[in-house]
Length: 285
Image (cartoon, rainbow, N blue to C red; front, side, top):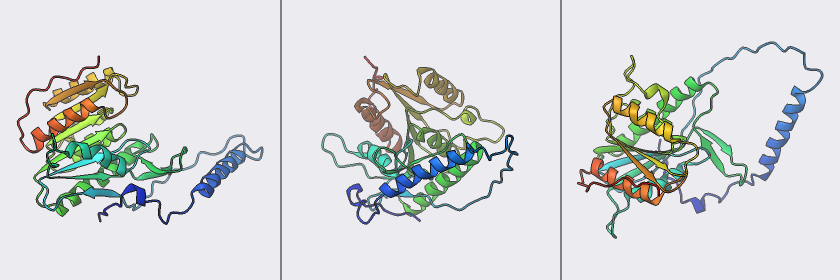
């Protein structure tokens, strides 16, 4: 089930004060530390058995669409962000140029399944996964995003082209969704995040079900997605015979203006077949 979201400035209406929740979390953490450090704890505690119990959770997918869109962009937000943040970076990619009306595309944003309170402002945000039970988390995330894409396509029968756009921590799940969602993907835009290791080769399981063209972005001030990681991703995707373009721009871990323009042109070319003049790489000064 998909739910349309209200504008962000309306979301605070009717919500409870989170201050008491935050204080409670702090008290619980302190109590847990005290218990672990108690002299009553045995010197060598037995190793606990870990049970992995399947659980049903509901993902939150935000959708903005015209009545009969021709293409769909699915965006994946970064760590400690929300679906609304993904919609915010998708909207400029749909905007028309030179005062032209927006492209007739729908935009959608699955929110990560692991919400938490952001410390600085108690805003509810989310993350895609941690290193804990990594393989199970990957499988859960791919099942969720593949189902989200399938439901979006069913809800939007006029859509003929599909693009994946991802930022930071969301890049890994963006690539995984493109490879394994069971749908034809026509373009991938990946900013400030690397290709997951299991997708560096075809492998015995044929993980790449589709081979879309990819645009990779990196700012010259980027601290997390290094030039070495970028080079490795370009080599891996090239070995898979996937067309790859790179946009380097002046900026950091962010949606730089030069990259937004390049991504807009890239998506127009692959989702609408709009011929685009050769765009030189936006090199950092």
